[in-house]
Length: 406
Image 1 (tube, rainbow, N blue to C red):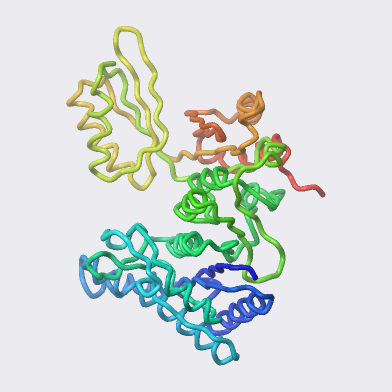
Image 2 (image 1 turned 30 degrees about the vertical axis):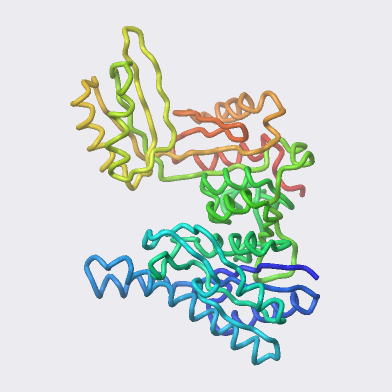
């Protein structure tokens, strides 16, 4: 008998008929001899509509009350599924986040899971129940309902799978797995049968929207096998697992593209201790995310420092940077929008030479200028003009042998 956690997103529970499809899938898993815990999101669009209502009720909705309101979306879907399963002749019980023992910190609308007391879930499973848990929510030490932020149901599911030591956590979505790149950009993209946690983390952080990054972090930390698959078919999806030697046979596993980047450059600032702190401190205080950072040392004790920020924060970040530039005596502070970050990812590149040169020569052959470069052990990212981003994805996909076979 296996122990399976199944998570269904908003599109999978968008209406009663789709919830019925979920019930049938859950029953098939249970009748195959498995104990099943189901984690549900709110119906598609419900969370946004609740936020809209909150904004109509108050100019700046109180965080505690907003969490209480948003949690009702998942409360609805778990109750409906449990009713449906019971009506179909199966023992089922719905639990809200706090009833499932999910304890979080007190950060309203973006809480983090601290611990899970899964005793109630284990008791229900032992009694033959299918347990249906509201994703996206928990409770803090003061007894307040909390929510985990966008994509929080993925995190709930993987965290619960870790807590109960499930054999697998199945994440059902509107896509049928993890692809080598976005199929809407490259028609030759192909589905991967497996991918490592580290590769999935990189892909999630670089624009792939299949899995929420916090859920992958949980899966890696607790070694939870995650199966990404579609809600609308029976085919196998993609397993997210610990790295193994077979994964190294494929040098590059995927190509990602993150549009909406912007760049800020400080020219000729003093190359002395503390300057970087003076530059990035005000940016951090404004809660602006800084991604790639490059420093070029000049002669005469000066340096240029360039970094990227999300385009939505560009104007605010540039204004802060210009004020900082005056304070530290920079010759000029300038910026650019309409940029994109294109990345290649693969655990195999650790053991293969020539990966970077292949990437750079492929982009050069298409006349695509590289403005910034950053690397990790399993990733190389290049900032290019946004208008070339999709072309870059397609030519790199071909160059590294990722195109699906005709």
